Image 1 (tube, rainbow, N blue to C red):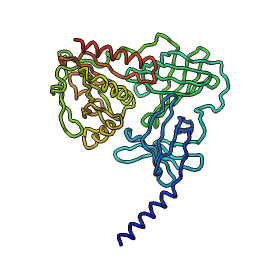
Image 2 (spheres, rainbow, N blue to C red):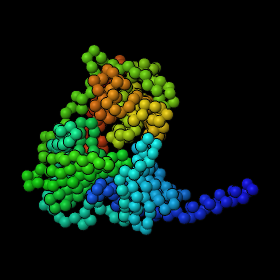
Image 3 (cartoon, rainbow, N blue to C red):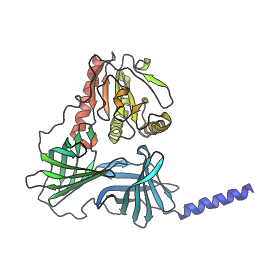
Length: 407
């Protein structure tokens, strides 16, 4: 009887595998659908063994690895588990048709329709005509926030080569990562998808040189914006948003790691060392960019007398819920330093660190000297998609660490 069951299971597995559609190594033009508009990005799909696939999302110069993709029947699942996100699409010849799904409270729901066409490589214009417009430069940008009846400021960095366009927008709490698109006539189009965020910019290039249009984000977000060429446009200092309240010069905390072990700056590991606190979250793409920088930096510099501690602010305060997400992030990026569950990423996040006036954004990086005193608090992160701003961040980071170590 056991032998017969084993044989049936083997045959079942054979036929399931046999019926699955196989996708060859290929590049696809993918798009999420926000109403009548496409939000395009590239996909690179490389087959592995046993119906598994290696998949990369292509956003301009970024080649972003997704988690291992797999077939279920005739549908391809492309997960980004760290963001509770999944592209699920039926494979039919050279097309993929399905949806972008997100997990909410343990339930997978459809977020936006998704489609992809094999062999296509364009984003917005398949064969864009030459244009007389060139939007390369730095822009003072204002995004209107209807819910607050005000606007937020950003610095736009655009680079146009022919009709191809790349760039990003820097805000006081982070950047819009890798945006890519086209200039078509007197209009520009850019987009980005990273498993968590989906951004679509559509705008007119006005005769005055200003750029005016809209930002479509996620499921239903929309913000009008206007950008003016201004090479002197700058954000407020990143050290001005979060600071110690009067009367404080240090931080005192005790937070658990994912196994429940409490970690404190008073622990022997941190005595007499320069410590960098990384206020982060597994839901935050900018935090992932900072972690990609922090991990190799720490591995190279820890022996100098520097420690890093990740303080994770998650959607749930429960270790049984947030712990696996933190562990997954740690494994994905090979994080060698402690990651602690510090609180939730809501309006009350600052209560976890009462010496701070507030937690204004993620990531926030706190630099502590050998005597345990907070010396600088830096809100936001200018990631690799920001070019020279990323280079400047690295230079400033290293200079500050060297200064603190020399004291």
